Amino acid sequence: MPELPQALSVSQLNQRAKQTLERDVGEVWVEGELSNVSRPASGHVYFTLKDDRAQIRCALFRQRARFVSAPMRDGDQVKLRGRVSLFEPRGDYQLIADAVQAAGLGELLAAFERLKAQLEGEGVFANTRPLPFPPRKLLILSSATGAAIRDVLAVLEARWPLADVTLIPVPVQGAEAAPAMISALALLNRQARLDPERDVILMTRGGGSLEDLWAFNSEHLARAIFHSRLPVMSAVGHEVDITLADFAADMRAPTPSAAAERLVPDQNTLKRQLEHQHSRLQRAMQARLERDSQRLDTLRAKLRHPGEQLNRQRQHLTGLNQRLNRAMQQTLDQQKAQVTQLSRRLTSQDMTRLHRAEKERVSQLQRRLGTAMQRQLESRQARLTSAARELNAVSPLAVLGRGYAIAQDEQGQVVRRASDTQPGQKLTVKLAEGRLNVEVKRRLKS
Image: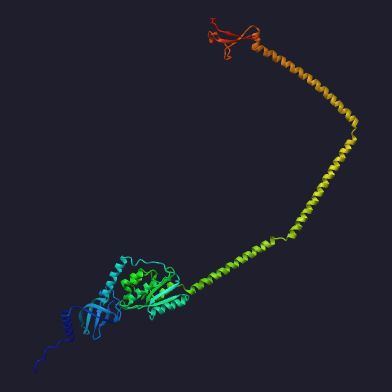
């Protein structure tokens, strides 16, 4: 019986298969669709990468998973870099991933960032005009059958039924979407009846993938939004979706519903505010009526009827008249009493004797006056004689009477010394009786 070849154990076979795979295939890039994505508490990510004909199990260990920015959701198309290997305990053929990125999106994102930087440098994202609130006319660029327009109209109807809404149906996805929206913008901006201060344009659509929203990343659309005469609000996709149209618009809303909420007020809120203000007004009016009523009562208490006022004045006047009559009667009585008293005194006097006494008194005063006048005259004459004697004693005329003379120069100055004269000088000499005009011939020494 021939000898059988030596058999390998299962573990040895799996080990050889692993070594062969890692050596011959090594590191590869593989593209496919994610499915069965699992993230256990360990931090590792386990998933299946498949296409329409095959699949392979994959593992992304925690050390590498923290460097992957792609969301990695079931159904995502990705490019994966990894090493082909085999899990020996179960003999499972697998791919150990090192890096994962979204397939087809890398180039789009790079183009998006380049165009964004270019337009931002040119100032295309500088629009920040205030939007009218609420707008007189709301012009909506959107698909007529999409979920976005239904959400917007539902919110507008609930919040502000008075909104005047005009839908301009345009495609919001595909190659024809951007040109159609640019043409609609141009058409609206040529409408003279539209006012930038009162009207606003809303560009909106629902969520989708980056490719679905790519029409809103058109450079020409961004420039058309920037140059729009009418202010523009952009509400494209979900809150995480950002497009160049959002940057170029005057205002961005995270969702179509949020855009409608920002564009119009809430009628229920306004009703509550109106009711609150109405209540405040009623309370203020009631308080004012109560204050005025109290003030009216106070004034009414102070107010008197004119007849009552006249009665008080009449009574006061009557009192004053009575007081005046009493005062006049009292004064008259006093005067009568005084006259009566004087009459009695006058009657009691002897007029003849009184006349003789007064006549004697006048004669006596006349004699006393004559005596006093005579004594005063004699006293004044004596004082005058004494003063005359004293005056005559000091008078220069008295000196002249004794033979002296007074010489005066032409200026009337008295000449006291011979040295004060000059030969030929004219002098006036005053004598006791008369004057002499003389001329100095010569001066003699004393």
